[in-house]
Length: 133
Image 1 (cartoon, rainbow, N blue to C red):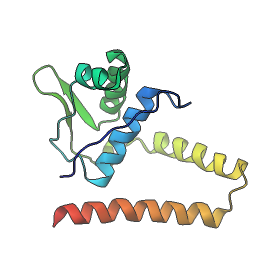
Image 2 (cartoon, rainbow, N blue to C red):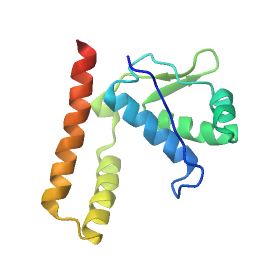
Image 3 (cartoon, one colour):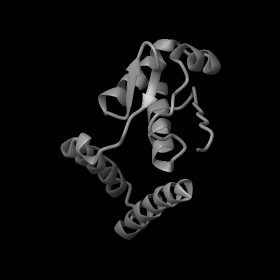
């Protein structure tokens, strides 16, 4: 398992809780976090970044709602098994639709978008295969 390194940009337009959520999802996809991995306690992570612990709570709650972590008073935030049937296809499709619409609105050619998607998916697959060795 790889070390989990989270970075937040306090000046970014993307809310901090969303940055944390997105980075945890990417760490799971890359294999840096596997089933049973624990995330830092909310207060610890908040103190490390100098942010309000409710911001971290919001990120963790989103991950819990998405079925990627479970929260417990005893164990804290723990990565759960990733079953495809836990993903709501309509939710995933809606988010993908928005990202693709942004690409079209910015005039990014379809072949570039498709190549970027393939490259990213391949990078996740490669990371997971490397971790299984």
